[in-house]
Figure 1 (spheres, helix red, strand yellow):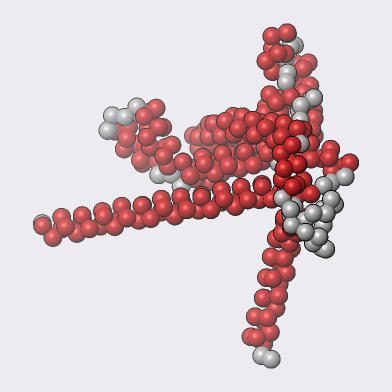
Figure 2 (cartoon, one colour):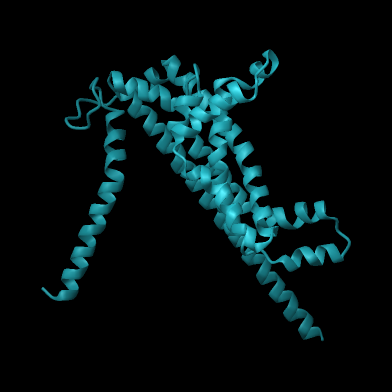
Length: 291
């Protein structure tokens, strides 16, 4: 056996080991969702069934937690993306010597333990704001507090994503639009936002997923309400069932479908952009030929 053959064999072995480590647990969990055994197990496979999906839908606490998680995720996304966008634009505009301090302040929530964020959110809205009956009815709710608590650090993720895109923006486009008579709001809506669209979409997806799976902050800020992760944590302590595996199959399937749709749309946009460039080249050649 030559050294090249041995190297290829070792690379194939480590690659297979890596993918087994990465996809092994989800695959085994998916198998347990279709096993008739009342305890989650893939081996031995006693028989095929889909009853666990029906029991999952019938679980009232699980469905309530799922609905709350979706509501919180949408709220966190709606709050975090604009805050991250504003912070990224401000970061790009302020004096360069102040950027380090501003950057440290904006990303500090990412470095703060979620437990502290959750507890401080509840204390702030309960004591520091001096809640009256009206403000308490508006703000002192588990879902509202969780949105505020999660958005305080999720917006920092959005900031980093948008900053990475904004660093490649050509400021001369703004100057050209202003020279042609456009106002600053028009430049923002018609020049900057279209350029940042991929980053905004990515930031929105990351914000929703970060909110959906968050546990530490949610545990303390959700109060008497429940989210999917808190319900799962409580049920796992009492003993897991294949219904949880059925939930995992649904989440994995939705993630795969979303990834496929995103990749399809991305390639379609790239193909359209490439076609526009090709049309521009052909038009330029035609003009040069006429000249």
